[in-house]
Amino acid sequence: MKFKALILTGLAGIALSACTSAPKIPQLETGVLQEVQNLEVYPDTANNKAKLTKFPGKCVIEFTGNMEAGKSIEQWAFKGLTLISGGSATFAKDGTSTANNFDLNAPEVQKNFLALRNHFHEDALTQCN
Image 1 (spheres, one colour):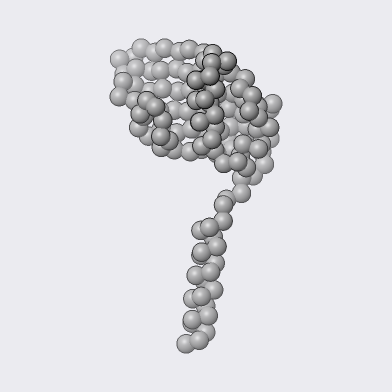
Image 2 (cartoon, rainbow, N blue to C red; image 1 turned 135 degrees about the horizontal axis):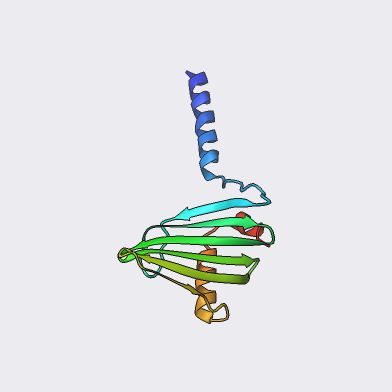
């Protein structure tokens, strides 16, 4: 009986430590570092996701959100905290689409970039410096 209790205590300890430790994000030269889903964003989107990908010399966040009127995709290229480029494309359900580049110096654009960037784990973002 004591042996069973000892085994169960050991297994519970292992399970608890496995649940509380943060996953390590591997160092990559290029490739997807992390993907997050169902972000709270404005305007409201359903089943949205953002993917952080490392490329030589920069990282790119690609945000995809489904809205009532269609689908929106944003891409933000950056290195560290410096925004290199950004833009969006919207694909309406009627088959039309629009695209635009962001004004990188606009305070609202900088604010939106930082808000989106903050959804990613610090270990992943460190690889973008």
